[in-house]
Length: 205
Image 1 (tube, rainbow, N blue to C red):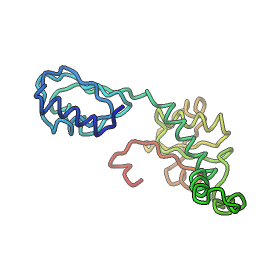
Image 2: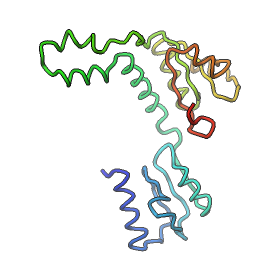
Image 3: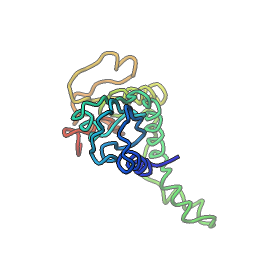
Image 4: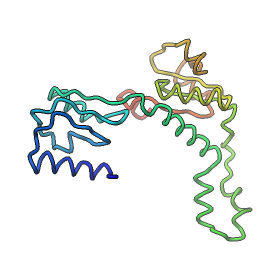
């Protein structure tokens, strides 16, 4: 397996150093293609296929300028990301990070067991079960998160998409109820999950 930086170096070597500009298509796995080729134009390139759910803004602009098709797999990781989000919420509720960090620090000392709860206790932490969870951005991933929370943890799920549109199927199939505004969602929620795209309007949300 290679990491992203190694992949970029390999791409640079083949495209720039060895002047292999005869590619018709490139399978792009977690790479920033535009940066890898230093913005160099590949005259025969017709398609870049990203083996991921997303792609970089730089690659999009590069393809648009050079008339190259850019493909991705937008729904590939919806359920996987939803599972991860639920896992992180449970880890937060149970203070997994602080408890693990403390356990590593104290090791096998006699004080470890009785000191663990005191060190990690947090009056603001609560059970995920039956909590109110606000989801900002109930898209493909957000709906999967909502479904798990509502029907798996009996949570009260509210959402805000920013467009003011209510979808009846969200209330029934995914167990989420639209909040009147972003402000009311924040006020009512025990947990907030931001799963919206990073754009100019959502930066520093």
